[in-house]
Image (cartoon, rainbow, N blue to C red; front, side, top):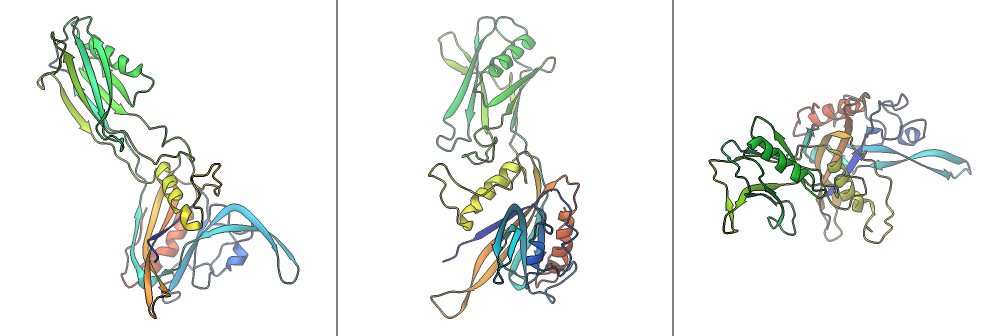
Length: 348
């Protein structure tokens, strides 16, 4: 049984090659003088370059291909060596009558969680131990159970002095998961989540992209040694949740890792893991075009055609000095508009 299959094609910041013209045959543009590495192009049902403005009346099925930097050579039946052909990645057939959704997702920057602790009503007491306890909610193994605690004994009654000292105490911890900033004169201690290095460092990160999520507590130690919460009238916490954004390189990398299995790369446990060169670029940002469609196929257990759900995702680098995103949309928008569901143009 076929489950939902996802194809991901990642473009580079380039413009369409001059030899990639309407009607050009796939075997022609696959030569290294045709498609450039990282170039995406839409093909018709005969696997020739789809004419901009074509509709399903011209071709009821399309394919989308991405050229890679890898090349291959072969010898044809006549014994002629053919060299310099680019390897390509190709989507499954996209049948116009079976397209269910078509939309764009513009790049949106991620932003870390912030918790602003307003200390306006706090009156530090010399010799009292104050505690900032941060409870983390983003650790799936122990949600809400992993904490980091920072202790500070007040040496003055000056709020600005003690607030800055607490921020310095937090920032001195090399294993901290938040950064602290105290702004003199505003009585505000700002805690900002930090990038998680295990998921935001390289294409080879094992952990999936995630962001720090936490709840801070501001306490003090009583004369009996117990912890007590400073009254809410003295400290107020205002939190802005983490925003994962869209089209950040970590998200594209994770999606690229997810689709490897559909291309036969299933060994990710026996090291060294041998995988194709990744197309995601660290620190790049991407717009995405998403096509959700069904792929009809003849099932071996019956005599009628079934539909297998598929998703084809195109990712384009932004900001871009090249024009290939616009070139692809000039092919896709008219064709999608002519589908039975008459999809609106994608504008990114």
